[in-house]
Image (cartoon, rainbow, N blue to C red; front, top):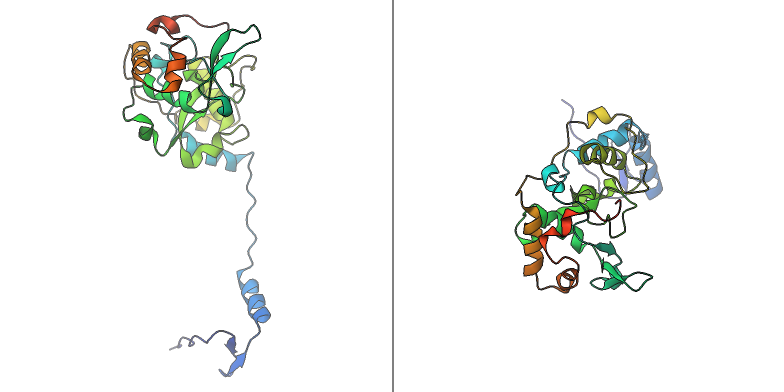
Amino acid sequence: TAQSTPRESSGRIRDASGRSAPCSRAKRAATIHSVMKTDLPAIDYKGKDARAIALLAARLCLLPDKKTVGQFKKAVFPTQRKTALRATPIIDASKKKIGMWDDNTTPRWALRWSHDIPGGDTALEGWRVAHVWDNCNNVRCYTRLENLFLVPAAYAGLTDEDGPLAPYLRYHAYEHYKWCPEPTQNPHEPAGYDMFRNEWKYLPHATDDANNLVFNRLQESKSRRAEVLREFIRNAHYWDQPIGKA
């Protein structure tokens, strides 16, 4: 029966007769390299490999409930991202206040409040509120529910503008909600979309009165952001009419 070779102390190997002999670090490294050398397969980030990665993320994302989306004819809040000026009014060229500068707080409020998710922002721990479209940093689109979704934080990078999930997510969002930010062209169905068609998941429908739900949450909040936003959102009818064509 073959016997296992005793482990040698660092820096020594056994020759063919079993005698121990010194071994240089370079020789040991060369020996290990010759044994472990492996050609790794190339990853196709634009083809089937990208689709496989994107499909895994798509199955874990949560999109807004369609009936809830239909209760808001415009962005939930008139906000736009500029972190350095967050919680201050946006003033246009005519000196008119048109909204509020923000970081990522109001997109979280929009999705969480409209779907009656309890527990404050800690309720979203492990999740990232992300945008479907990249050209959405304006008051008409930044908090549109059609433009928001939840993705596990570990997969958030897959939803970036050039990420593998982006074309499938955008096509589905347009197909499902019939909305995309102007001047975006209606997206075309990406190759391999049939793999994704029945994989999307949605937040549960919470109420047929989501407008009042959001309005009440805004009234209850003691934050500086809520104080600024109450100047624009004076009642729950605020969401009954769209702004422009956004």
